[in-house]
Length: 451
Image 1 (cartoon, rainbow, N blue to C red):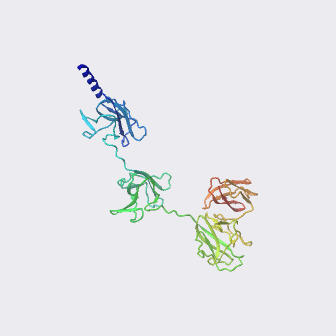
Image 2 (cartoon, rainbow, N blue to C red):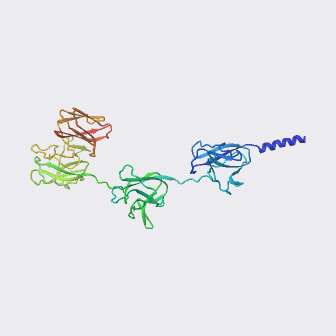
Image 3 (cartoon, rainbow, N blue to C red):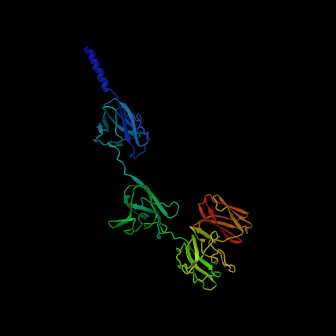
């Protein structure tokens, strides 16, 4: 009986020391700077075998794990990768390690199923969360810089004002240089320079984009997310001013058939705010043709003739070839693309007075005039317009379509067919001007695109 009791006790004791516990190992590889394929766990429980216990990262969060059934109550182990292609170097006497015979490994006591914390590679602790970062694209416009330079760069407190650490590039040759940097979400001071501090911006203190600290004035920005900064002009907070091309336009009105009384005709339009007598006209030779030359941006303008500070004004007919009606107001319409002298049109008419010749009407302006040679249909259209001609006048015919801003959006030449199709599926809704130039002169038509 005693022998049976001792034998039973031995079996119970043996079962206790050999009980299995499921242990989940986890290692965070997010801040590991080397290259690897597969981490693994090695220890005295698997004879430091290499890749016997490879780990996995099922959700691709950078934290690798493996669960093993272990019978030992205490183990030494470490993380490695790619069959000992790399392994941890652990610091002796840290809280999670044990040094035996000169080897420092991780050490734990096991007293049941457990999931170990996701420790950082070569650390006893979880990985510290990196500060939030943003991708910041810096841009500087060098088109109006009058000095010489080779390569601009951005310097700031984020790179220790290092010189040419963060050089910029201009891949499309438009003089706007840029570079994108990952920066910690914070406030930064910076400026643009070039050629490793051979030149740098001089910024004015107190302007909106700067901050002055200890006598140094730099650009200043608070970061809170990815951003593409505006392409600012060198030494300025704003984008470079781009001058608009302008043209000298001579407006002419023939008052010979006007039956009322007046003193001085004037020109009013969108370009002068319909100001009244700002642009008074002149008839120096007394032929009743009044004119004024105005420098205007190359654009689309509306205008009309009046006299004596709006004492009288033209009443233009909606639908006529030279006018546009907007919000109930009918005005003359002009698309400016270069210097020109306009024909001396009759008061309240799109044409010259019967006895008046137009003189030199060679122009880079689309003059709104009618012609019996050509017809345009359907109008408006959403798909295409057809231009029919009884006679083009010559084989060398040029057709140009201008949008409302005066930009040419379609052009074709050398017509020798009776019908020309202009497809407008890709054009935006709105008014367009079609200019047809042939040996007969110029004919201009309005077309409306409506999808």
